[in-house]
Length: 253
Ligand SMILES: NC(=O)C1=CN([C@@H]2O[C@H](COP(=O)(O)OP(=O)(O)OC[C@H]3O[C@@H](n4cnc5c(N)ncnc54)[C@H](OP(=O)(O)O)[C@@H]3O)[C@@H](O)[C@H]2O)C=CC1
Ligand SMILES: C[C@H](O)[C@@H]1OC(=O)[C@H](O)[C@@H]1O
Image 1 (spheres, rainbow, N blue to C red):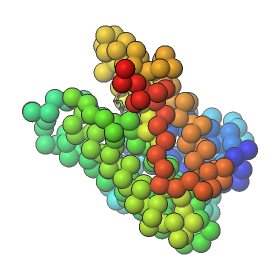
Image 2 (cartoon, rainbow, N blue to C red):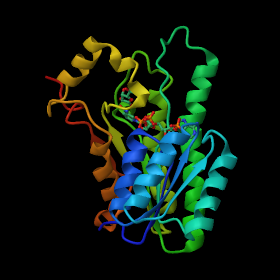
Image 3 (tube, protein in one colour):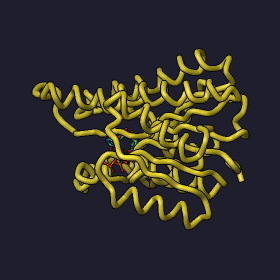
């Protein structure tokens, strides 16, 4: 097992990619704490799946846009499990909207949840790891959208580029502490975040047609790459960004 005896924290662990990563971490031997903001039923279901695997689980509610949520999440996990070995910064939103009439509050909320939230969470986890004194691993969920644009994502893609950049700079800041920082860059993965957007059958087919592996992604497609980067198998990997997109990014012609 790749994460035997480790404590793993996942933000946005109540559905989609975060839920899949949390359950896979437990399958790989970790105790897991998840953060969520509103979906208590989803959080409870993930806790039940982790416990069914014989591991300890904790769900902590909180809005990642607020710095105090990060402090409270890490404190709650340490109170329950004593330490933080792996931190997965995953929580995010993508309220699709046109650029020219983007409401300021939609832009600002997306920045606060996706980028400010990642910063505060990663900072809180890193401080705990530094205090423990024996390293750790941080994996942030960025996106293929860090590298390419989206007409209705002008508020969102900069947050994903920012998360990619945050991991690069954090890798430098934290390397001396033995803390590795990497990102995964998912392509289009079928989750709640894009359920309405991909209800448009024409768009869904167009997105799938771009993928050399022939299908859109499932949350579980991210679980392995996240666990790998979190594990000692990736012990000399830091500052890296791993595309997990079925080949969509490289598919120009
Ligand atoms: N699906 C995709 O195609 C892609 C997704 N991503 C990224 O993956 C990450 C996960 O998204 P995905 O699994 O797809 O979508 P989901 O909507 O399924 O999951 C989003 C998760 O984030 C949580 N969340 C949202 N806002 C907050 C908040 N303010 N505070 C705390 N938690 C919050 C949700 O909690 P709750 O359930 O309680 O609302 C939920 O657990 C996001 O960062 C997204 O940008 C990147 C590339 C592609
Ligand atoms: C939510 C979108 O469908 C999804 O988010 C991303 O980051 C991907 O690039 C997709 O656009």
